Structures are given as structure tokens and as C-alpha cells.
Figure 1 (cartoon, one colour):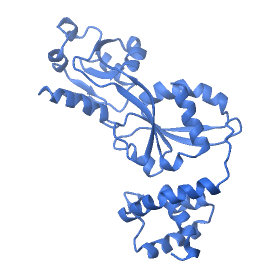
Figure 2 (cartoon, rainbow, N blue to C red):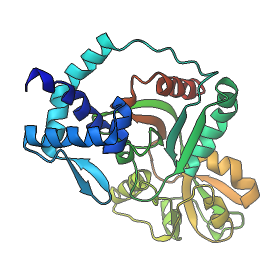
Figure 3 (cartoon, rainbow, N blue to C red):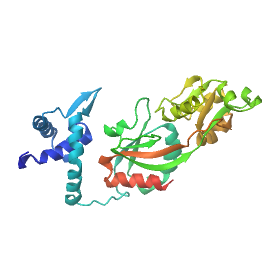
Figure 4 (tube, one colour):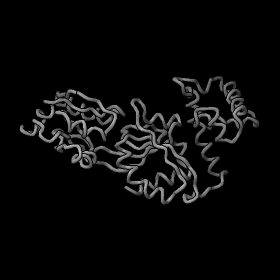
Length: 297
């Protein structure tokens, strides 16, 4: 690579981080045509497409990912020694940040944080996207969101994680459910249809099913929901059984007319953490928001 081509490394880094020409151009403060020209030069230089279109989004090629991994330490060092330190002032910030979370996490995390956050940073905006099936941590990789709060047991190596809290899961049935007239145990638990809250990520639901498979048992799913907060009300009007976070059962049990029971099988704690991509790790505003949320827990 000729000395005159060294700036292409910064353009390459922006393209890999932003997964799009327009956003990459904004990151390095050049025009979109200039970034398109840089992408063309990078493709010729590396004899590789660098970014390819898949399912409506740009994704890096395997070769581009390998090159980016190799170049990243040098780029990080260059930024560390050459970029002036910027102090973040939450009181004057007008930053908008996009967060991805289920309604359960919005209920347990954001409802607890938002009051103090709007006082400390009155000009900041959180844009919360509701979790949807088949979407998760890859939204960080493609830069569709900047922060995810939730339960993901196996994050990728290029993601950072900060633990927030954990809680037990319990079983929920309606008041007057026929199971309350029987001895509560695994047989009773499996004798009725179940509500599955797997429509978001499936991770915790899979933990339940694996625990049952370890005893050569399985549950019958009668209803799959995309909302944790709707679940108690569905249970309160049926003979279905749900396995939900304790906080949801406590908060909505009275209104929904449900009864809380201990799970009749050993289940892991439900762990909620923050997840973000390496590209945002040194962003002062991003770091301030992460630390502010974490301090609340």
C-alpha cells in the first residue's frame, strides 16, 4: 500500500463499523461519493467485494472481517494517541441513542432508569426498539442499534457486556386453577398447556426445555407470546401455565388474578446485561449512558 493510500484504512474501518456507505461517510466526515470511491479503491486493492448486500443489509465478506481484525489494534492505537480527549457533558448533550429491549426489560430496567436519566441529561433521547423474533445481538453488529439490554448467554467476541441484575423465574397460574387442588410438582406442571415466551430470542425458553429433556420430559406449548407483560393476563383467563420472571409475576399478579408457584424443576437465574459493539466502547456519551444505567442496579 502506497503512503498516499493510508487514509483508506480509516475509510475501511468506517465501512466495517457502519456497514453502509452513507453512515461511513458521516463517521469520517467526507461526502458519500468520496466514500463510494474509497470503497471501489479498497475492492481493487484487496481484490475482494468488502461489503455485499444480503437481505436488504450490507454484510462484510470473510476476507474483510479477517483484515479488519488484523488492522483494528493499529487503528485503535492511532486513535488513542492522535484524537483529542472529549469530555461528555450530559447536561448539554443532544445525543440520541437507539436501544433494543423486550417489554420485560423495558419494564424492569428502563422504567427504573428513565426518571433520573432525564434529569441528568434532559436533552438526551433514548429510542427504544421492541424486540422482534429472529433479531438480537446481530443488530449491534450491523449497527442498527447502539445498545441492547437483555439475556444473551453467548455474545460474540466483538461485543462488550456489563451485568445488571439477575432474578429467579416462577410459575404463574390463574386463581382457582385445577392444579391448585393437586400436589404441585413436575407431573402437575406438565399436565396442562403452557405459554411460551420464546418469540423474542428463545434463549431462556430453551433452558426450560433442556432442563425437562434432562428428565426425559417435555411441555406442551399452547400459546406463544411476544409480550411478557401480556402473559399474566392470558394466564389469568385460561388454564395455561407460564414460567416467567418473578418481577413480572409480582407486579401484575393481582391485576391479572394469578397465583405464583415455585418452578418444579431446577432452572438457572434469568440474567440481564447490557451489550454493545466494540466500535462504541470509547464513545464518551455511550460510556456515560452505560455507566448511568449500571449504577442504578
